[in-house]
Length: 288
Image (cartoon, rainbow, N blue to C red):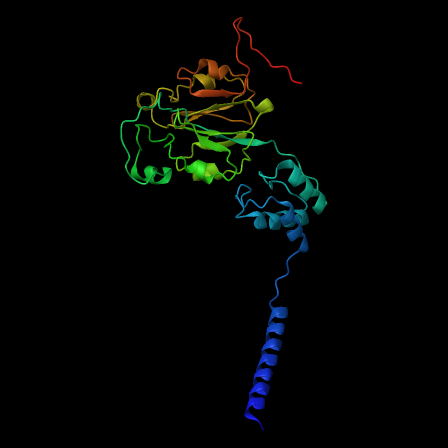
C-alpha cells in the first residue's frame, strides 16, 4: 500500500478518536450556565467598577440570578446603572426590588492649604499610597488627604477632581455613581459614600483625625477635637464620638444643623442648604 495513503489513514483515525474523546469530555465536564445570567449581564452597564461588591458585572449578574431563585434581591444594587437598570433587571427576573436611596462620595477632610500648612517636602513617588506608606506626608496631620489624586485616577466617570486652590479632591454629585472606587483608592479612608439627601442636602463631619484635641488643632485649624458639643446638641442621637472624632450617622440625622452651629472648629460641613440672608432667615430658591 502507498505509504502516503497509510499516513493519511492513520492521521485520520487519530483525529477521529481525538474528536470522540473531546466530545465525550465536553459532555461529561460541561458546566451549565443559566441563560438568564447573560441576559442580565447585557442589561448591566459593563463598567466592572466593583461598586456592587463583586469583581465585575458578570459576578453581579450571577448573584442577581441566584438571588431571584432564592426569592429576594435585597442587598444587590448596581450603583452605576441606578434604579433604571435595576428596574429592568427586576422585570427580567420577575422580581420586585426596593429603590435604594441614591448615594454620593463625600470627602471627609477639610484640611486645605489654608487650614493645614505644609511643613515637609515629599520627593518620592507621587501617589497617595506611596506617600502614606512613608509616613504622615507633607503636613502634621497623619489622617487627612495627601493630595496626590489617587481617587481621581481611580474614578472611571470623571466625577472627582483635585481643587488646585485647596489641594483637596471634590466629587461632582451629578456625575458620581457611588461606585466606591475612589473610597477604595484612598489609603487614609477619608472618602465615604453617604446618602445624597433630600435636594442633595447633607451634613457630615469633615475630619477623620483621631489625635487628641490639642494635637489635631496644631495640625489643622478645622480639625474635629472630639469635644462632644455636637453630640450633646443633637436630639436624634445621630452623633457619636469615637477615637477623639465625631461621626454623624446619615440614617439618624434629620438635617436640623444644630450641630453645625455649636462646632467650635467648624469641622462639620453642610452641603446644598440655602444661604442665610441679612434678616437671619434662609433664602430658598423656588422650584419650577
